[in-house]
Amino acid sequence: MTRINHPSNRSVAEVAWLYYVKNMTQGEIAKAMGLSRPTIISYLKQAKERQIVCVKISGEHFRLNALADALKSRFGLTEVQVIPDEGLAGEALTRAVCEAAAQSLPDFVSPGDELGVSWGQTVWFVSESVPWWPVADLTVRQLIGSMANPLLPTSESCSTEIARRLSAACINLNAPAVCSSASLATMLKAEPIIAEQLGNLSRCQKALYSLSPCTPDTHVVLFKIATEQDIADYVARGAVGIIAGRFIDRKGAPVLGPLDDRLIGADHETLRRMTGFLVVSGLHKLEPTLAALRGGYVDHMVLDVALAEAVLAAA
Image (cartoon, rainbow, N blue to C red; front, side, top):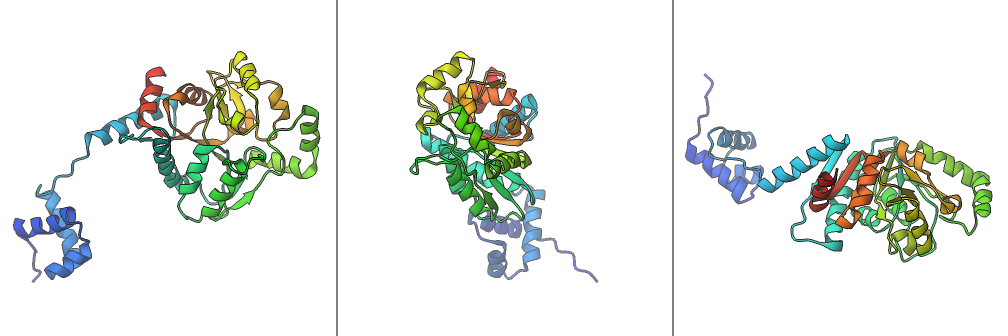
C-alpha cells in the first residue's frame, strides 16, 4: 500500500521559512529536518499551492519590463534590458549598465560566430565584466584600426579582453584607425594583409558597440581620431551620433565627409548588416541612441531606465 504524504501546514511553513527567509539550501533543510531533498522540494511546491508562500514581483520590475517590452515593440528589437538607477549616476550608473550587458554577452553570441567589437569607455567597462565563459569557435574582430594612446580603452584592448574571457580567437586590425591623409589610407587599405582583414569584417554576424554624441568632448576627439573642427564640420552636415567612428544623422543615415576617407575600419553598410548589441547610458546620449535605432543598427540593447523613458517619449 502506497503511503500518501500530506504534511501539515506547520511543517510546510517551517520548510518555507528556512528556505525563503533563512536562505538555507534544500540540502541543508533536508539534513536539519531529517527529510529527503525531494520531500523538501515537494513541501516548497505545496507552500505555494496552499498560499503559505506568495510570490510578489516588485512594482519597479514591472515598470522595467514594461519599458523593455515597449522598446522592443516600437523599434522591432530582439532583446532589451532596462537597468534601474538605484541612486546611481554618471560613471557608476554606466558601470551598472555595462555589468548587465557583460552578463548577457555569452548568450548573445553562439558557437562559430564572428563578433565585431568597437571601443571606448563603455565597451571597455563591458569587457572588464564579461564572465569567463568559453564559446566554441568564436572569433572576435576589431571594428576599427589601432589607436596610439595606451592609457585609453582602445579597440584592440577591448577586443582582446573580450576574446580572452570567452576563449575566442582574436583578430586585430593591423592598421591605424585614422591616417594623416586619404591617399595614405588608400595605400594602406590596398596592402594585402590589411585588405584581407577589412574584407573579413563582413563575416561578422554580430557587433558590440556603444555610441557618442557629436560634441567637442566626444571620445573620437579624445582618441585623436578627429579634431573638434572635424566634429563641427560633420554636425554642419547633419550628424548627431557616432558609431565605431562613423557619423549618422537623426534618421540613422550615413553622414560622409573628408574624415571617412582617412578612417580604416568597418563602414556604415558593414556595421548595419551585423546584429548590433548596443550598450548605452546617460541622457546626453539620447539623440544618437534614437538615430541608431532609426537607422537599423540595433537588435539587442542594454540601457538605463531614464534613457529608456526618454527614448520612448521622443520616439
